[in-house]
Length: 183
Image (tube, rainbow, N blue to C red; front, side):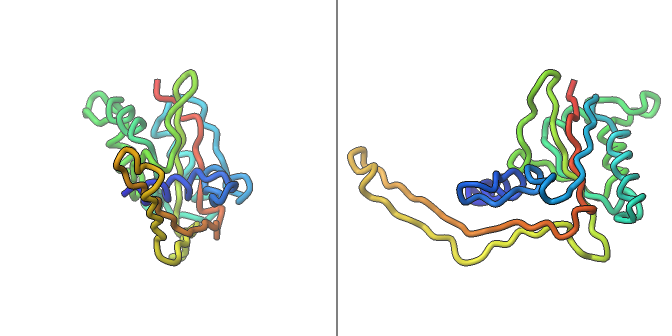
């Protein structure tokens, strides 16, 4: 679990320095991925606009072909916001109906911050069955056992190392939404 958490963080938010790969989100400009500044209250309309941009660039046929990666705080905010008071539908209900798949993670996206508090989301789609980016992991996980560093307290230190890299095959199939305000 710890290795998976670290790999998610590196794959999406990696700095590209000190042995980390350049993450899909942190390296969006380098990879040619569009970053769409919402800079307003998170809404279904902001996601719909991004889906429309995918459709205009012929990357997706509609919302059902788009996947989103969001923070749990955005899910909570949208689930607590009424989309249609008459029907009782929340913004989350509407977004879930609009998009093909939504995954929540606290590993791959930075925690909400700023004033007002805002977060980021990643939208992707596959065109012709080709993924927008690839995460390569090879070799076995190397485990280093260190019985000396913590020996005085009776501890044993274990370090696990994994080799991985990230590449973006089709930047037009990804879009980063920034400034999704949670207030």
